[in-house]
Length: 327
Ligand SMILES: [Zn+2]
Image (spheres, protein in one colour):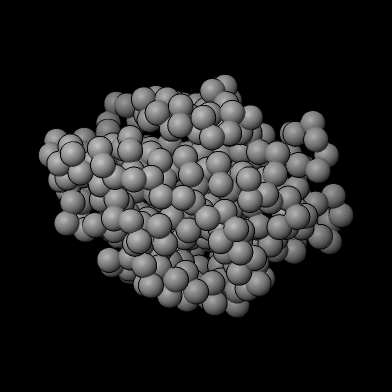
């Protein structure tokens, strides 16, 4: 993801209200009110989520074209196949900076019979260059992406386990997005390749009522603010999620608005979806007053920065939303 410094991009995104693709979404909830009311809220296993970050890290950097990218894709597909009703790959290729990239979004669905659905996304690719490193020769080295890539995927994989063991009251689709972090600094065109593709070639049969993107959700001193594009797209969803989040972790879920962050929710918003991002926005651009937290797009994005507490806060918030409050 990238902080929006460029006014033109803000304007482009700001105009989407003029030409949204309206989705007709059934009012029928698919489950009865009593079913919804009785759904217990399962527990999010943060230790499992932490291990899932380590498992991704074990493949090395997962930037497109690297061996770790291919092994991780197989791992994610196999993992989801254990739990979901349906799993698929959405392959596509794209020329970027003179290289033909082979990219794959990975989809999984739970309770495919229900017409009211939400989509949860995280990017599974990692940045091919540590361009925020000071030392020039380090700037071309691919990052490990424990938080940037690893954390969001880990939260959604642990959710997949929960969704298989405790059928949710609404339909849930998960899409792990490729090619989020390929763009060079400031080149917005080449960020978020997987979400751009998915928003225009929506891979599930039923459109979701909401799209929730999680990214950079594992830091041990995370703070998750309201992000401006999300606010413009779905303010009521931010309210509901942060209401739940603040109950679990008030220092993490803070109802404070920050500048727009260009992330995988934006292509969905541009295509007419109602989408938000849950993101530790202060990490983006390395502007934290805390030196330890200035590791975004560097070789220091490693599991040492991650805490189970933050993973739990985010994961349990999503669980409670899915089982009690959504859509
Ligand atoms: Zn990134």
